[in-house]
Length: 149
Image 1 (cartoon, rainbow, N blue to C red):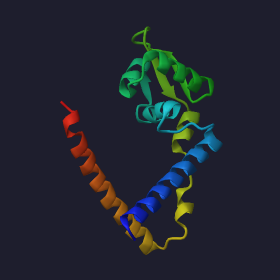
Image 2 (cartoon, rainbow, N blue to C red; image 1 turned 135 degrees about the horizontal axis):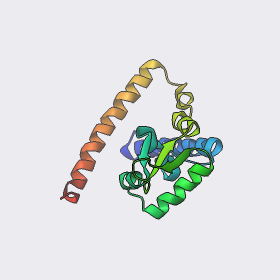
Image 3 (cartoon, rainbow, N blue to C red; image 1 turned 180 degrees about the horizontal axis):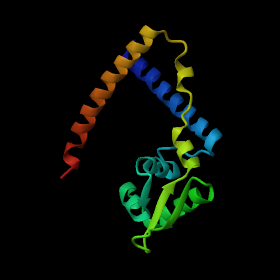
Image 4 (tube, rainbow, N blue to C red; image 1 turned 90 degrees about the vertical axis):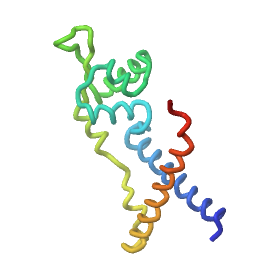
């Protein structure tokens, strides 16, 4: 298989897997993706169950006004709660609710994508993807070496 054909097949599989994930989250969680917007906030809260709104904004590099709007939507939909800190009445504390935790535990059923592969094929694919990932890390590091001070 030529490199061009290989890349075409590889990128098509990547594109379709991304579409499957997007469709699944849209269907099950009104499109909330754990890597973007409100979903990204919930992912951060899963790691830090309780955090101040200010710290959350700094961690995610989101402007206070934008963060406030996203948190209001999450609160209205029952994914988080906010309350004043007992130590500092000016600080708002953000906490993940059981519904927010449930969102974080849900994932599309990726297993059904690989039912046509036997154990040996899965192992070979895993090894190949591991090699690709390792090389990508190296290429990204080389490409961004000058970006950091």
